[in-house]
Image (cartoon, rainbow, N blue to C red; front, side):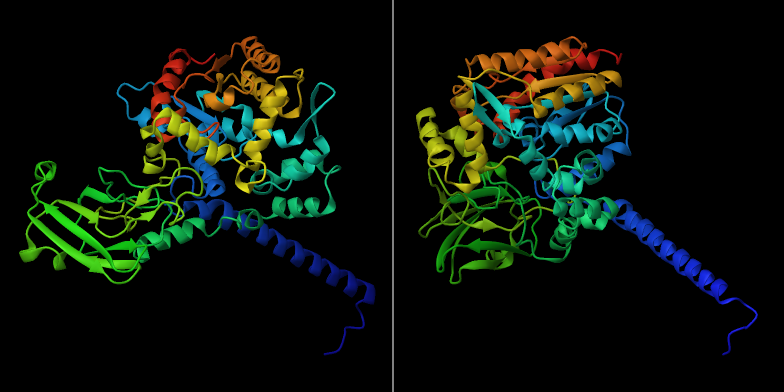
Length: 522
C-alpha cells in the first residue's frame, strides 16, 4: 500500500501519536474503572461467611461498607483496637429488651489512634448517633517511645517509616498516608504506597482469597478444615478448635448420616451413649451404649447408623474417650501455662445445621476462656506468669506486651508530656465535636496484675486528666473503667477480657452510656 504523497509526513506522525495517546489513556481508564468495580464494589457483594477474628482487614472493610449502606433508628458505633473487640459483646447488648440503640463495631486488631485519625471520615459516613472509643494504654505504640531525660521521647522518624509498612496504611489509607509523609518515607515504601493508592487489587491481595476459601470450605468440603467450631456445644465445654474434654454430651439437633471426628492417636477407644431426650441424659439412663475402637489416627468418619441398632430415635449423644487422653499442648491448643487433657476433635458443624450468616464480629464462648474462670486465683496467677510474663523479653509472641509492660514500669519515674499518638486522640475528639456527633472515650478495663505497675504514677494521673479535661471542655464524655473488672480471672492477658469477662463488663459498659443515648444529638 502506497503512502498518499499529498499528506505531509509530519501530519501522519502527529496523527499516530494522538492515536497512541488516546488508546493508552482509554486502556488505563478502563483498567482503573474495572479495578474499582471488581475489587471495591463487586468483591464485597460476595457472601461473607468468615468467622470471628479470622480475616481482620477484609472484615473491617466489609463491615464499614455495610454500615455506610444502612441506617438504624439510633446507632452506637464502638471503635478501637482488639481491646474494644474483646471488651464488649454487641450481639448480647442488641438482644436486650427495650433497647434504645443498635450497637455496632468499627474496629480491627492493632488499631492505633493514628489509624482512627485516618478513618474518622469513614466512621462519620457510617451514620453514628454516638461514637464510643474504647481506649487502652497498650494502644499508644510504646515500641516508639524511649525514656530519656525524665520523659518519654517519641521516635517519629522510625514511626513514620514503619507505619507505612503496616497493613492499615497499605490496605485502607495508602493515599492519605503517602500524601502526609512522602518526604520522610524511603523510596521502596513510596513506590509500594503509590501502587496501592492506584489499584485496589494491589491493596486487597493480602486477604483476597479469605472469604472465597471459607465459602468453598463451608459448601463443598467435609467440615474438617475451619477456623472456629460452630457445631453443637457439649455441656462440658469445648475448645474453639473443636477439641472436646474427656467426655462430650451434646444435643444432636441435626442428625446427618455421617459426621467426622479427629483422633490424635491410633487405636483410640470411644464409648457412645445415646439418650432419647435431655431428661434421660440428666438421669444417666441411656437407651443404648456402644464401644468402638478406631484404628487410625487423624480424621475418621462417624456413621450413626452403624452405632444405633434398629434406627432407634435419639436426640442426645455422649462421647467418652476410654483410651489414654492427649493434652492441649500436644495438639497445639496452648504452648505455655497449665496443661489440660483433651478428648477428640469434632467437625465444623457437628450435629448441627450449618448457619452461614456473617459472624465476623460475633464472639462465642469456648473452653479456651472458660477454663481460666474455673481456676483458683493463686492457680490463675501462676498460670498467668507462665503464659504472659516468663521470658517475655525473648518470646516473639510477647514482644509487644513486653514493651507495654516496661513502659508502665518506666512511667513511675517520668513526667507526662503529649506526643503524636496522644494528640491524635484530641484531634479525633475535635473532629466529632465539629461534626456535632456525641463522642465518648472509655478507658477499658485492665488486668489488676499489670495495672499495679503504674497505677499510682503521676504520669498516669496527668495522662488521664489531660484526656478528661480536653473532652469535658467540649461537652464530651470521659469514662475511666480501668478498674471496673477486679477479678483477674476475667482477663486472658494484660488488656483483653475473656468471653466471661466481656459478659460481666457488658452491663457496666451499657449502663455508663445510657445518659448519652437518652440525650438527643446537639
